[in-house]
Image (cartoon, rainbow, N blue to C red):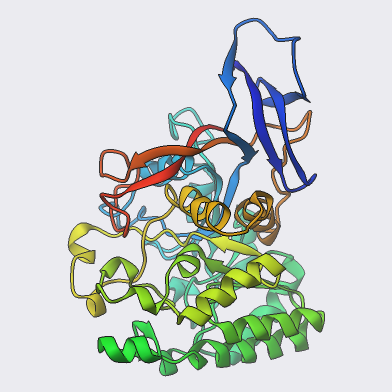
Length: 423
């Protein structure tokens, strides 16, 4: 394995709160030295100029969708992992809604083994972290063999869709407590959400779009928090999208409930105010909130009420997504785009410290998965990315590793690009 010396790079490490310029030497996949200047360099070391660039821990995505198995026309494991690496993600949580779903230990093993053998994947590959399904077929009815899934290597448990039976939720929290694995739940009352594709409010009304009230999320969240308070099993609350949910989570944390929470990157960037063009790539689930929701989510991440930013990368074919807004399947791709766009929006154009963005996309996301977070320390394994916040590139089919193209940035030029990954 070659050695690399990255000279005079800006090192960001949330674990040590480091934000400084240094030389970093990587030898045989290990960080061997971090110093103001390194002169003792092994032979045949590749020198990488770091001026103006960022060296940070690898990014960690809590939950995203894989097309394979079952929907390879949307995304294969090869294209998914290549997209992750291109975007700087060295760990990737995979939701269980594949076909067949990840409700069997053999399917879990298929993901955990991917890229670990010489025949698995010839390219640089992130660590795939499959979520085991809570219920068979993710249908919300019959429990899976939770112990067997955990033994096979499931990072944690979720169906990736709202559970509608409160008694089932209670039983799951009771049964899963001894396993000490992350549990990710999406609070949403589907009967209240109905066929809503935008958050209820003036914008949805003006645009004539079917709307979903905020209470579809908040009533389910309040019920879930009561259950957690009773049983005390740790839970990760996924896809938080409303200002009222932020208030409920803040109160629950203040009361000592064992919860973490995440929102998706798209809910930080858009709101119902951006729906006037009826772009089907802004059709999400949960739907985009009002501008007050968007502002509350950004502030909640800054203040630590929310813990992490998830990608929820959702690939679809051109034919599936190029339909009327209300008929479009929800979701967009994001693995290759999130870091540059969030850096530009939150760091360059707002007041976020770079370390804070890296916390939400890397270290705290890893902790939500129950994993030790990546860190830039001497004698650690190199799980790093080199990012140029000034590099410009155009989002086109030929520049994307993902097979899918469902993104509002298609054909547009963006600023910021991951140049190199070590994992």
